[in-house]
Length: 180
Image (cartoon, rainbow, N blue to C red; front, side):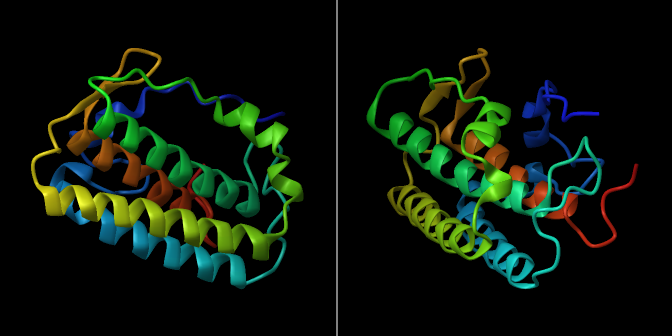
């Protein structure tokens, strides 16, 4: 069975804990996101350094650890671009990004784990620094942006929504694996 595109609307994660991974974005302040991004990148470094069958899918319908790491790297890059759009333009609409198309076009499963680890760390550092700058400025958390599907975010909700994704994906690749 091939990987089915994820069509769920995950925006609810800013309001309550995720029943799968347990992360509760509603319980954190936006100023905590930079630290969570840095910690997450550190955890991904350990996962990628552990070696093993990083490019092997646990089943046909689930991404490999390497594919998830590539996705997280690209999420950090994409959300940094979107953050800048929100800070520099009035209520921008984000260009669409299809994560499943990106995985195929960028050949996530064929990438070098060491290179991915370095790129993921760099992308996380950039995004975390940019969230730190928002926290230092203090007045930009209410700026808005809209996803191509119409979901509207403030920088605050955007930050908390974003940080769930890489945290959730660490849960996805945990040695015991997600249930189901």
